Each structure stands twice: as structure tokens, then as C-alpha cells.
Image (cartoon, rainbow, N blue to C red; front, top):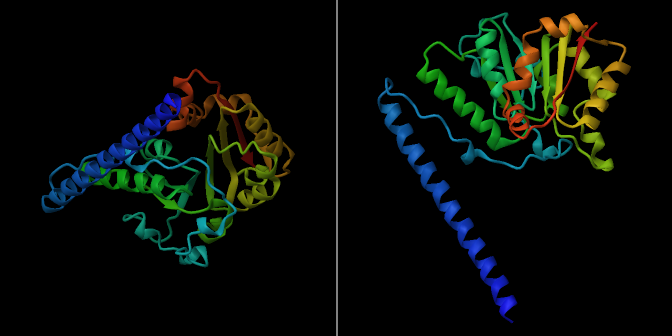
Length: 276
């Protein structure tokens, strides 16, 4: 009986803790809204950066589910209103880099600094996570006038919507940083690298464009590298090209997942291939 009571008490305590945590998050959210209003009234006042803990969302999503589709996309990529995402984009300019599964945007912000004349888009299937990236970009644009105008984020399912976003031979770089390994056999079809998807990526990439992949899961690394090696339109970077590409170090260090792996003492497996 005492053991049963103890279990009930533990369940009750966990419920109270969750409720308290929920209340804290709600209070912080309300404070953020109040600060936002104050900033809107005073455009010279610095905005506070959004807090990641308010935008947490489970890592695993079903990329084949229609519920993850963004039905606000244009039917043709030529009709996409990119000015909504890049205020300074001129007619004839276009997105150059795509970070597929951008997470909390660590790579995007670095790309903005390293390539000020190129436009980068982060594609993220998780709504809350994408909202964080958008909010952070908005805050940085406000606090650092004239900066971060060349990056943006879009909540969408990259396995389904790339033909709505890009035209043939448009992209020069595509990034796949620490994608979901999808260990279960029935979920392998969810992996973001496959022969079918590589054919699609190849269509949207310029000749000489590069696909960057990195993971801390060796089996996934072997899968991605193997598929890229098998595809007739991609060839792996040479040793010299790996050494001379400044983004090799960036993708290994700048994303939140890269930092997590580093903190936990994990190993990172890299594979980069050039479009023929």
C-alpha cells in the first residue's frame, strides 16, 4: 500500500512540476509580448532575442504526411513572392543556398555573414522551430540595421515542395546537417537522401554546385554517401577541395546539433559531393 501511495505521490508531483513549467513558459511568453509592444512603440529600442526553450518541438516528424504541407506556396516557382522573405531582393535575383532541415538556424546566420551577396533559405518542417528562426532573424534585422536581410526561413516539407520553390539549375549549395536517421526499417523511406530525391536535387542544382552532408550516426553517413556515390550526376569533392572549402569547418561547428555532438564528445561524419 505504501509503495502504491508513493507512486501516486510521484505522479502527482510530476503533474505539479509540469503545470509549474507550463505557467513559467506562459509568463515568459507574456513578458516577451509586452517587450515586443514597447519596442514597436520605440523603433530605436533593441529587441530581446527569442528563447529557444519557448519554441521546443519533438524532433521526429512524418515527412510523408500531407499535414506537413505548406499550401500557401505558389504553384510555380516563378510566382513565388520572395520579397516577402527578402525585403531587398531585386528583380532577377534568386535564392542561392538551401539549408534543408535548418533547425534553429545556426548555419543560416553564419551563411549571412560569410556570403552577404547570396540569398539563403532555411526549410524546416517543424512549425515552432521555424517560428524561432523567423523571430530571431526579425530581431537581428531590427537590432543590426542592414544586416541579415539575405536569409529567411520557411516552414515546409522539402520532400514534397521543392518544385514550388526553385527552378532548374538555380541552387549552388544544398545543406543536410544532422538529418533524422530514421532507424526503423519501415521509416527508411523517410530519409532525406535517396536516389529519387537526389535526382530532384540534381535538377535544381547548378553544375559545380555542392551538396553538404554531416551526421553523428555512422550508418546514416554510409547510407547518404553510398547513395551519392551511386548517383551519376554527383562526384565527391577531392581531398584538396575539402581542405580549401571554408564551409567544411562551418557545418561541423555552427549548427545547434553540431555543438551538441561536440559537447557530448561524439564523432561527426562528413560527405560532400559536387554536381557534375
